[in-house]
View (cartoon, rainbow, N blue to C red):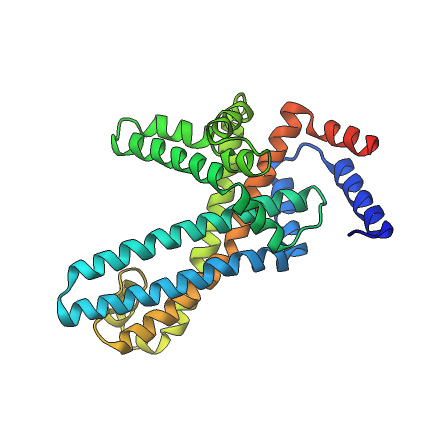
Length: 298
């Protein structure tokens, strides 16, 4: 139960958050994105580390299965293990992203939240959230593989970009979440497109530079031998060939470093998308006014 001073503190935080809500430019979003991440680093790391553990374990198990195939030739077993682990990893990643989405929305509004509460909301709303994202991916992928449908896939890919927030934060059903996202994006497609591309490229390049740089540092003794060894190191980063347990150890180290950087960068993109969502609501629906009225009426 909250004590009186706790309730007063939360009320003050919410009022301060409501008062600070205003339309944001791209630079404002980047500044807020890194500020929120820095100020709530422990929260975001506590959520992301769940996926990190599953990803590293999954990579090691797949590597072990690959070595078994190299020694015994049981390809069917490897395919089965790989498929099951891939499904588990995708489900965990979606669950973690859901918790990050809800956590990002709450901290932006000045609401105190811990990792447990974020995971509970992701679990409670996982059905609609999963269904909305399944429909999103299904439509975009089907349109993309037709080649001529790529422009339409891009259109709907951005039009439904806020479906996770609509399902988790606004608690809409899967279909309504897609419609809600469409309503928010309507009239601002190009602006949202530019912001989302900018955030994606920033996260992608920073993550790629860090991953490649650290992996090359770890493999420095190999790269000192010349260009051939350096190219072999680069190939092992992306297409590892595992035949011995020594190869698996090296693969495990690369997986640990690569996934550690990935989970450090994962919240950045989620926070950025969340800020674009709130910016759109403020511009289109006067969400800042709504929050002020709500805080004044409490």
